[in-house]
Length: 165
Image (tube, rainbow, N blue to C red):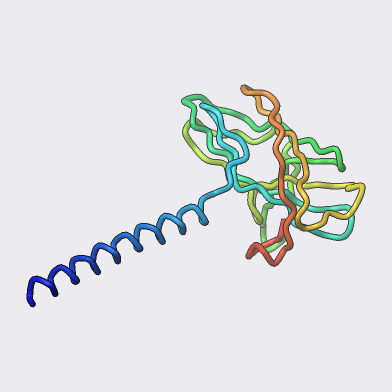
């Protein structure tokens, strides 16, 4: 009787362990960043543009410089309007955006996060309203690796916690 209970207990522990692995693997995949470009030097992930009515929006993404040399994001282009690199600056309680005409330096083996309240791509003079669910092509120009075209999904502002520029 004790051997049967031990076998059942071991079987239950093994099943519980396998289920734990299965669930944790599924959660990791669900929370993993969406990689839209990767080579030996650069990884671009987690891009999005906030849906909106009007001629202005912003794009956000992460860039991982895996190389041992500095890289610079020089510019961003879009066929839907003007795209400019910006940085949000708060000084004396006043929020302003600074156009970064010289680009953004990405140190060796470091990350650049374009996100609300920080660096971002300002999209101006949009030719039409952006709609959640569509994808917009942006062309990122880097100093060393050149131009990279990526598809960026448009999302509702409620899908992200903070949607300020």
